[in-house]
Image: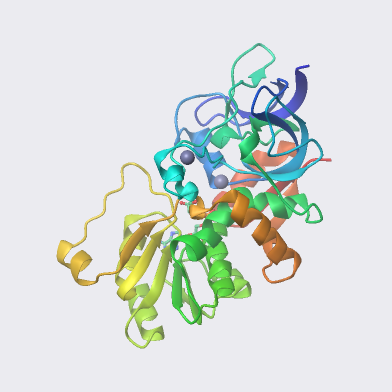
Length: 362
Ligand code: APR
Ligand code: ZN
Ligand code: ZN
């Protein structure tokens, strides 16, 4: 039976978000309905509201979430009702050319629920990243549910659904940071700080955090940065080179998504080093680099999609490491808020006050 729940909807470009009644159909084949327990507020939600992703309004926002599977449709074997899951936006298909070559972490054909959630008048909603979890319940593809240890708090678990996984994965999966490496992270918001956590976990010897905001640098230190550079007052390329014997870092992770910070990352790495772009640029941005430098400096220039994560491999592992105290995911939860507080959370995000505001459902 179709259920009525409360959800946060972005009705149109730059219009304030509203809490609306959302109709959630019963799960069809391959689908699951999940009772959401917590969902973090991410920049991508704000980008949806502002029209930066596409024009398919109205959007059902929210995508960094954890909850309990309530019901599943026919043929669903991945999860059963009662499972505690993190929602992911990489439901691996198993059949595309990337999956068939043994690279499911890049799956080119990820899927979402087939049925649509709607408003009371029947208007179809576009769920953010195919999830739509600022809602008491949401309908997803069963492959978007990844079962993890249920003893972790939902507010913490949900973080792995997007930004924190992107940052940790940028260091571990994309950057392949190894024991003893020097790592620099440019931009220390939630994603950059998660990259710092990932670099520490991997055994990096030196972790240099770069930001234009001293508050962010202080937090980055608590996450594991060994050195900090305020790039508003100091040339970050010079500073990173100085801190690495004049050479540059083995891996530089760009977590802002701008041409100027990408260039800093490019020149702040050692010869044959790796640049990882995990910050998301806008379509109008252009990069101008001397091609001879691209050649002459060697190494790898990589982009990190969702931390190149494989949810079934990475989510349970990171939750286990958190539970063992080897990483502190709780440090990313700045505040917990209610469903009606999303606009306030967007404003705080804009001010740079929070790593993550997380909506908790009772
Ligand atoms: N140089 C260094 N740091 C910068 C610069 C700059 N020119 N401009 C902004 N920053 C810092 C900000 O001070 C902030 O600490 O980058 C950080 C960005 O953090 P958030 O705004 O919290 O964003 P976050 O959630 O971490 O995401 C970062 O990754 O997933 C993408 O879309 C996301 O592009 C965004 C990026
Ligand atoms: Zn695939
Ligand atoms: Zn996100």
